[in-house]
Every structure is written in structure tokens, then in C-alpha cells.
Image (cartoon, rainbow, N blue to C red; front, side):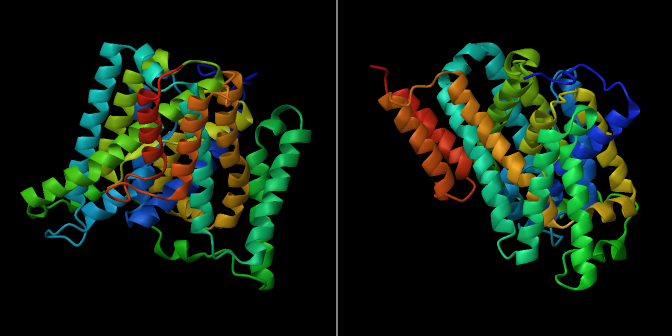
Length: 419
């Protein structure tokens, strides 16, 4: 891919830097807030946690990976379970933070294993047909997740989402120069104006300004809600049971995400800065997120798609986006305004972004000339896609989707020998 800005390059103009940052911020904002709403954790703290997590990740990886780190959807079931554990408070944030500590430990252990045994052995365990299939699955699962969240959409919401998609596609295809690199912003602006008009006329209530009624000028840090009485040995055992499966899921998504981003930017992040550093950075970022916001963090597919779509891989854009999220957590009106953007507007961009992730996985299969006439490859790819989309789970709902699909694909790859 012909990148406009490579990983270590800074945008030349302030206008470029500002608008690339805004585009990335809006792309990751919706999922960040959505996961906080699902788990019932404070949004302001969630924004602060995501910003600090990304900065920590960049520091540990030496600013060599433009990945954005934010709230982890794979851990929602574990977080909700830990919050509901008995204790002195109605929400047990102390046990969530302990779960975050386990996440960091497991990530660091996997990072150490990657450093000791070498990346080549890991790549052999997860060949291109597994990585490509998992990447396709991640894109499809994100699309299904967004579709499930908005399944009660009315006609106007669907119409606006489609219009946003068309505007984004037209801008990306026909615009030239700088304008061509910010199609998502044009789509979001047009979609928001249309939603305002539809709401003002009274055809549908698409924009809700309730966020302005409870503006908060500082993050509601969850570590201030810890109570020693929230801890018990039975709670600890439950935390281990809840968090270990979702941590393995997150590690597998981490590997696939970084492989996908590597293919987009043309630099092998698995070797440089190295899987050991990206894992440690992600794991520490998760632990910090549970302390600040009660939510673990992880690599974000939305940022990967935005980088690929805009051809801007500058790590400084990701870093500035993290700074902006931190500022947003303290500036209540700005945060409230972004929360007024209806999900259908973001959904129009997601029609392209999530599909882009899936197509990136397809590119992996094509680029590596994967032979789907090969019986072993065909079986493994088929099982990964069907198990990941079907919704089946093993033991509990934490081990489903991408995690279960990768485990099954990994297992089949071990037992099915090449003829």
C-alpha cells in the first residue's frame, strides 16, 4: 500500500494533523463508549483509560506501532460478572482491577514466551490461512455486533446510515489530495446534519441531548470506589475463572490485529517492535484501564481500518488521538456533544470500516496464495468462519466468537498433517 504517512512520519501541516486525529478519534469513540455503556462503567473514566492505555502501549513499543488501544469488548462478560460480585459496594471495581492484574500477567507471560521461542514458531502455529480467516471473522463479528446493538433501528436511521456510507465512499473514490484522506469525516458531518434535520422536523428522534444534562468536568475514577471488604477468596476464584478465558481470547485477537495492521502498513510489527513488546504493552494497558475505568483495554480494529482507509499510518496521529481522549474526559461539553452523534451515523461508516477489516483478511489469503482446494486448508478455514459466526460457546459465553474459532483452528492445524 502506498502510504501518505509512514509509521514514524509526522503530518506536515497542522490542518492534516488535526483532521487525521479527529477522524481517528471519532472512529474509536463509538465502540469505546458503547462498551462502557454495556458494562455500566463511567464513560469519562473510560475515555481517560483508553488515552493513557494507548500512550503506555506506545512507550513500551518504542513508538513503532500505530495501533490504538481502547476498551475491550471481549472482556465484557468477565467485567460484568466481577462487578456483580458480593462486596461493600454495589459495583465491585476492586475485583475488576484484580482481573486486570491477571490479564497483565498472562500477557507478559505470552510475551516472554514469544521472546524465548521466537516469532517463527508462533507464525508456524498460526499460518496465513488461520490469520486471514480470523481477520475476516473479526470484521464480520464487529459488523454483527453493531447490527445487534442497532437491531431496533427505524427506517430513517437505516436511510441515514446508507447515505453516510455513500458519502464516505464517494469522497474516498473521487476526491483528490488531502480531502481524499478524510472521507470518514465528510460522511459523519453529512450524517449528523441529516439526523438534526430529521429530528427537528419530527420524523424521528435521532439525536438526544440528554448528555448535556449531566456534564461532568472530571473523570469518575473507579479506583476511588475500591473497598477492602469487596475482596474475598471466593471472589478471587471467580475472577480467575472469568478472566483467564477472555484473556486468551484477547491475546489471539491481539496477534491477528497486529498481523492485519502489518499487512496494511507494510511493516512486520510481529518482528519490529516485536510481539513480546506489543503483548506487554497491551497487557499493562489493560491493567491500567481496570484501575482507572473498570475496563480492560485491547487493540482496536476500528483504528486499523481507519489507517488502511486513509493511508495514514503515523504513530503520532494515534498518540495525539490518545491525548485528545484524555482531554475529552475532562471537558464535559465536548464529550457530551460527541455522545449526541447517533449510532446510525457511526453505523454508516462501520459499513465500510468493518468490511475493510474483513477484506484485509481476504487479502492475506490472496497475497499468500492460499490454496482452498487443499483439503486441510479448506477444513480449517471453514471451521474458523462457521464457529466464529455461529454464536456457539464453550463452557461459558466468554469463550465464543473469535476466541473459540482460533482455538479450533489452532487445534485442527496441529492434528491435520500435510499430505
